[in-house]
Length: 189
Image (cartoon, rainbow, N blue to C red):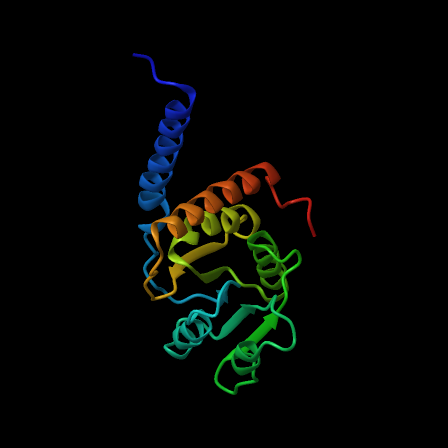
């Protein structure tokens, strides 16, 4: 007996979702952060206010860097950023919106400040599942020539449903393809 078109389509969808979940779990959810080391600046990528701002400042307070650059695409009314972007005497805190408001824009903003200030190394903080893609973008848009990036995840858990993880992995794969298509950042100033 031959399967009709509906069971074949369902089987194909289940296969794609299984492959997305399995590879996404290995590649994104279990991405390994780099060991901490002293750097010139800590870069806190935008996203959700999930403790990343406090974590970036905590690392600076522990002596990992004298400066924290916080991506601030949220607008002037955001209470969390108002709290963390206050002037401090012990740490330099820079809060700026990236242009464009993407990981690529954040890497370009970091590169611009590195060129102005002589930064050779940064710690980049984001979600654990964003680390592989953010690393690739920072390697292309920030690191050359002679700069290094330490990738660190926000110390938290992700209570996502299976559907949330599926969407997260699909998004990360699609955004990775977009980053590869965009290619080099050398022609962007």
